[in-house]
Image 1 (tube, one colour):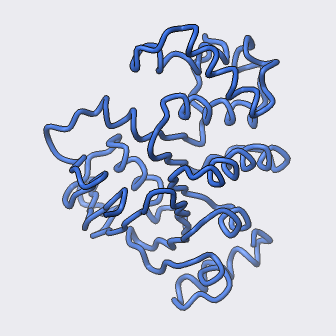
Image 2 (cartoon, rainbow, N blue to C red):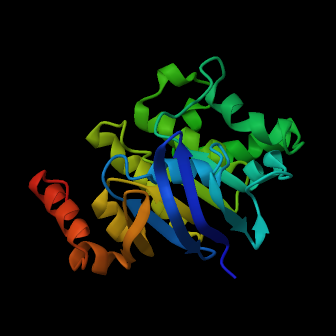
Length: 247
């Protein structure tokens, strides 16, 4: 049984269908990269998996248990499924350390001492212990994004969703964020990433899914999708990236 089963999911906003009869299984420890043009449904899909958006039809299951529809404990669900956005979303009135320990102390009941020790260990891994008592406005964009990832990891999620986490960063800051994701992938974290970083997708993904009009148009190993795509729309998308110098 797959860790995540997305089964014939559709998401509509009034008459606009953003996700259309979408099905995808994700195995434990697998890294899936979602690519495709803007508006193809990548971000919406991630928000549906985390229940930040309600699906219109279909079903999503984790370990075989339905997580969509009524009667689902959303607090429990979001402990198991972490999500990191492109906009960081750190609390500006809290220090880095306070941002990272808030959820585990309030939601998991972890003692402040235990949470601080755990947070400092994570911050050491990303070379930010010296920023523990700084406020977010004292950090670069890359540093804020790394802290946002640590905040998600503090909840020890079984699944991590990453939504275009480098798109708001200056090019020189992208690599420091992607280094963390590489480490997580090497450590076996199950991840679904929406990304425009094709070189990174080639390196870290087990499988790349090209989305078109809210559906999986083509999927496969990175070497196949990026090196020898079969679908005309995938080919056209990759040609546009090459022309723009992004592939």
